[in-house]
Structure formats: C-alpha cells, structure tokens
Length: 89
Image (cartoon, rainbow, N blue to C red; front, side, top):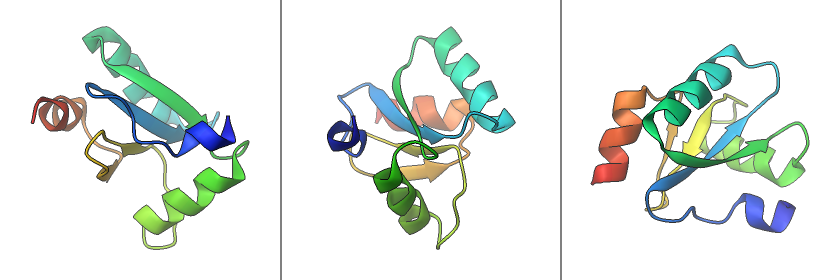
C-alpha cells in the first residue's frame, strides 16, 4: 500500500489522508460517498510516508483531512463543494 499511497489519483477521484478518529474526515468521507466521488483513504497513522506528505502540504502540521487531487494539488479540510469544483476543473 505504501508505494501507492502517494500516487496521484485517477481523474475524477481523490486521495484522502486521514486518521481513524478524525470527525472532519468521517464527515467528508460520507459527503463524498453521497456525491459519488471516488476516493482512496490513507490513514497517516498506518502509512509513515503519508505523514511527510501531509506535513509538507500543511506547513509542518499533521492536519487531516488533506486531499490530493489528480492535478497534483492538495487541499486541507475542503468543503464538499470545493472538492466537486476542483474535480470538475
């Protein structure tokens, strides 16, 4: 899994870096599920390489959810509207 954890997601999908206890992560997962947005979840507590990516994207903080988009950009705790907008671009 670790080799695929940091791969750019397929068009129309995202990679979501999360933790098992993150309420914001659980809410966004549910929203993406309702909207039919495909995502791969990577628990940063289980994938050490993912911690570095999240910290690099968040000025050294382990802030989740952090999403990786197909264009290589990332967003921290985005709204479902922002996720949909960025995937449509």
